[in-house]
Image (cartoon, rainbow, N blue to C red; front, side, top):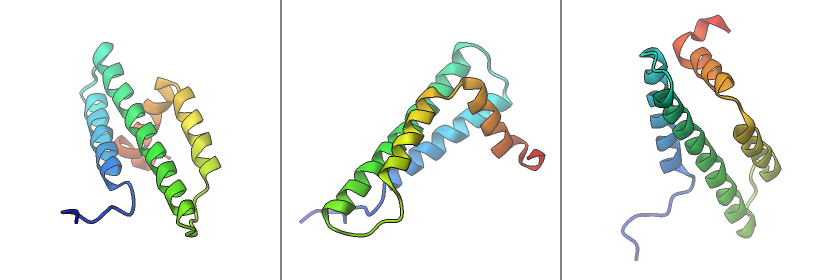
Length: 105
């Protein structure tokens, strides 16, 4: 018998994503440039992709167990493609509008 109950959603990936998001916000606020900036952006992108892949895995598991879900795998796959093609400027602007200047929308 396992020590912990199985998770019903990718909660660990959500935690990792929020941590990488906050690290990127800190890097933007401290105005890092060059390689340091790219390092935080790359980690954020990888964390976002891991989260989306974990959601797909969760949905496939739900389909295997014949349970209904509100999310669609195709939508998540298009989000993965969008995140792999997203430019660094777009990511920086998105993070700035979400965390640093939320009133400027």
